Image 1 (cartoon, one colour):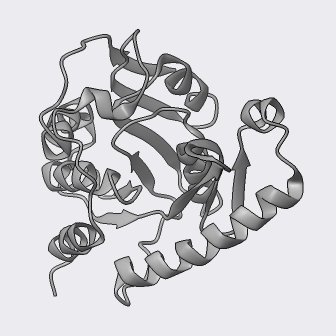
Image 2: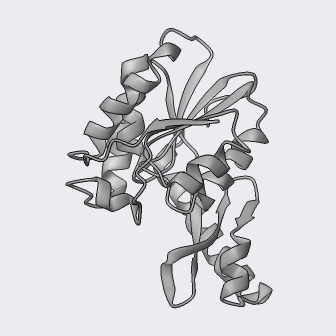
Length: 221
């Protein structure tokens, strides 16, 4: 079941959202088997605040959206590390997207995913997830396809529990994620939802450098 409120005041920025979301997951503080996983790029500033509040390790799970040709902002699916692919069948069917087009876009995104994984990790091995509680974080849920791919990728690494937590999400996506994650926490579930960015006063794009800096700060040498 997805938990959250219909409070509709926007966040100042992603760090503010992370600090507020940390209060919703405070019951996990002190769990020595907890790991916080962020979806880059926008999920990293949110997750950084949560990992700091919970005194938990922070890592990333790499996911790439498969944008609809001609409308790249509309997700027709997503891919994740480990060869996971999730398709939004409604979008694929509505726009009659051929399988060959999906494969071509997925190949390009796979190359980008591998490049970003090398860049963000800077030689660090992925955090071990087996038998751990995974708190999976992004800056919001719109269609939910990216998070669904992340849940499948994480599930393949055999954690004991997957908790999806986001500052804001559409009612449909929060409800659908509850079918595949062990728990879903959407801090805010606005009834009038059109895009994640509308719930942030500052929704400037998180840069690769910001991601590297935050991960470096969470993993001091």
